[in-house]
Amino acid sequence: MQLKRLIPCYTHVMNLDFLKALLTAAAPSGYEARASLIWKTEAETFADRISEDHYGNVYAEINPPAEGQAGRPIALMGHLDEIGLMVSHIDDKGMIAFLGVGGWDPQVLVGQRIRLLAHDDNTGEGDILGVIGKKAIHVMDAKDKSKASKLEDLWIDTALDLEEVRRRVPVGTVGVIEQPPIEQNGHLISKALDNRAGAFIVLEALRAMKAADVKLHVVAVGTSQEEIGCFGAQVSGFHLNPAAGVVVDVTHETLQPGVEEKKYGVVPFGSGANLAVGAMISPVIVRQMQTVAKAREIPVTLSASPRYTGTDADSLALARAGVPLAVVSIPNRYMHSPSEMVRLSDVQACIDLIAGWVESLNGVQDYTRR
Ligand SMILES: [Zn+2]
Image 1 (cartoon, rainbow, N blue to C red):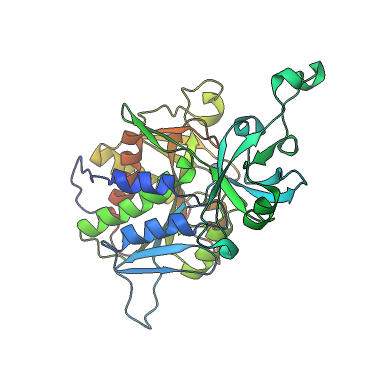
Image 2 (cartoon, rainbow, N blue to C red):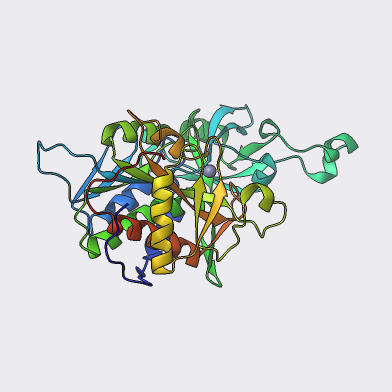
């Protein structure tokens, strides 16, 4: 491990308007275009090269090698997709049945407003808003009242006539929760903080590296389709063949009721960046990051991940001949709900840690486990 001289207490000023725009975009797994457009547009303000692939991944690079020259970059991944719904059936009253895109607790969907994304055939007519309907308490029998809703018990109601529903919301239409972000007391509350916050962090870290005149080839990737199986990371990991990587995602904040410190570690709001430790994680990179965190006074915590990580790291770690990587996580409350919550100082710590780590790298790294 080699470290350059470090500047203590380095802080990059993050662009919150960019994060709020990302959070507002409707972009479920497989349909990331609206979020990736915002991400690419921001990347264009400083990155040396921007590209995308057919699978929905977007790439922003600094110091790419000259045309025809090979090289293995450092890859920073944050997934751009959010959990959503997909229309599976329309009944003869115009009520819409749906399947989950990613992991939903059906209880949190009841009564929510859903933005149904306009598709190619209704161009110009725009999105449609619907609400998730459920039998009202007054019409439930005793048995209904005691049981939890399943997705198949719920429906989307758009208030449109049947013919218009069939035309504008055909089977396969996707939707997401409609819920604008709120900033309060140094926290953000929003849908899709899992994981627009991570996609934001990797691009802000890249911006900080550019400002610090880092000479390495670094690629920030807004990955697609994490919530349905980490597929975008599999595709982009193979494409990039990185020398090392960082995956940024959310983890469960541990002051919220019901999240056990015994299982998730001590990861309260204000504890900074969380580093996963475990089989899929490079212990070398974890040590390097801990050294950087100490030198720059960036708060970090550890959590145990003995098998899988439940993030894009599960794909990236196994791409091609394997990629040594770290998982940097943001403490988050109410994951996969319309009102997830993060503390901005923790987001900042993740940016500073990743930028600081790359700035500290000097020459070819040895990631052998000892
Ligand atoms: Zn998720």
